[in-house]
Length: 299
Ligand SMILES: Nc1ncnc2c1ncn2[C@@H]1O[C@H](COP(=O)(O)OP(=O)(O)OP(=O)(O)O)[C@@H](O)[C@H]1O
Ligand SMILES: [Mg+2]
Image (cartoon, rainbow, N blue to C red):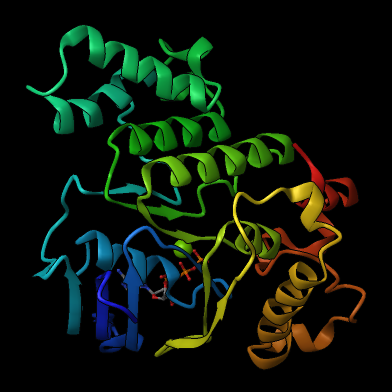
């Protein structure tokens, strides 16, 4: 790595206390990330992806090893590391607008005027197509809409490091493709560092500079790292026919379904596994064929 490296996980272990003794979820996870790099974490369900993200967010403390951001150890959450959680985490008594406002005030109080803050909140809600529902509370909107508000809140904080835990998992294919494009644009404009968890191999290849593939737990670690050397801006339509794109894609699929095959995968036929998703919650059977195509070529 070069001297731009600003985020580093060093020999991270984590043991969770359980009734039957400590459970080692992660072992010896080391990773250096450059400023502005877009890294995705991929691996089977339960391997420890969210745990890695939560340690970088400062929400979990490593049992051994640690995380350094800009030369300082991460010991607690901070506004320079905004998180989009796997289970959208909006405050239920606040509207969509107010939920975004919460993050914006945390970062921009005293720096933006009230009118500027209002415009900025509205801009970010529009970005995720939630302007029309700005005054609705979380119990009045769908899961995918809640997720979009969570994304707007994180983006509105203009974080140096954006941590996203399956941010598009609950979205329909069209919204997902739209938000992937928005995220690529935002990343190109702001140059923030992104660590994103996904189960979607196409999404990982489309968005990433590097795909970090995790082994199955317990004591999960980094199995392989794939550098995605596709020039930006990336066009999903053009990439669908790009041999390099398909080469990267099959590299990730081979890692997941050959080298880190789970016991239940043995029972499946290759045709069953002809999917872009790594997780049992998104099995091939549940994915409409046209949605799979959309992940590559849709807008
Ligand atoms: N607080 C906790 N206490 C005990 N075990 C935990 C705790 N948090 C996570 N684990 C365990 O650590 C392992 C990794 O969990 P984690 O949520 O990081 O997986 P994941 O890769 O994000 O899975 P998914 O893809 O399903 O979201 C799992 O076996 C999980 O049961
Ligand atoms: Mg998770």
